[in-house]
Length: 355
Ligand code: NAD
Ligand code: ZN
Image (cartoon, rainbow, N blue to C red; front, side, top):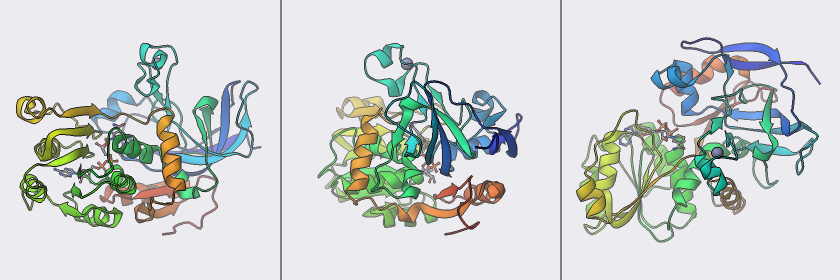
């Protein structure tokens, strides 16, 4: 067992990351130490890499990034039950406090004192990561390794899609980044009827089709609201899954929603958004839901069942695989606007770049 390891870290306030040699974390009595097999880069990691306004206010360097991963349990603390060295696992990276009001009433995903591993404490872009054992999730043997590395964003999509009825319902997904694309696949697997998607990036629009959207509309080139309303006999869709965080897309999404429909909002706008509450929510009798993280652990159970059913094909999302030393190439690729999941293999085991 080594005492030092490689870790991809934000070392100071400013753009960029550094590959550092740091001590392998100690596992406390209630922790698990995981040997990382594969970790995936999230849009949030790109924000931290570029050091945007949000990162400046939230991130306290030095910090190891990475909150989407899978790996093998290396060691567990003496109080840990239910997992053992050698288990193949992922983890819920939102760590709840256990004592606030929401934690006490069974809503830990919206805990008042939530900390995120890879954002508030050292994450998984490293050879090893320390995780509170109660957050560790054993991977069903039927789930492929590369899928196990992206359960965190897939869980966001599953949480949003299954936050209300979906079977037999018409759906609009606004924004086809990785999470929007996964939401398309999940909604399809759960038996939605016609699914419309909006996206401004042609690469991502093409992926949306491959993931199962019936019609993908570029709202810059066509009147997306008119198109969706026309295709639904003027009524609008039953379900809006807002996956962009873009104010225009959010406003259009509400105009596409039928009276009595459900709007599940996951995308995070960087500023307050103007909404016509009277026309789009109140007179419509719409149900509006904020979607944050994944339900602990209902979403993980649902996601496992969906993956085991074999109905979720996420292959179009995967792109290159890198060892940590090639992190610059990985981030540059993603900054180019790909909606793909790029994987790191911090302990090696892949031959540099693979498709
Ligand atoms: P992303 O930024 O890769 O995807 C957003 C997509 O929206 C992009 O493909 C973009 O081209 C598209 N878009 C932009 N303007 C548009 C418009 N006017 N119409 C249609 N599409 C438009 O992000 P992602 O990683 O897929 O995540 C989706 C959103 O969810 C982001 O806002 C992210 O910050 C947020 N997020 C929320 C949670 C949560 O728990 N609520 C968790 C993770 C991510
Ligand atoms: Zn709490």
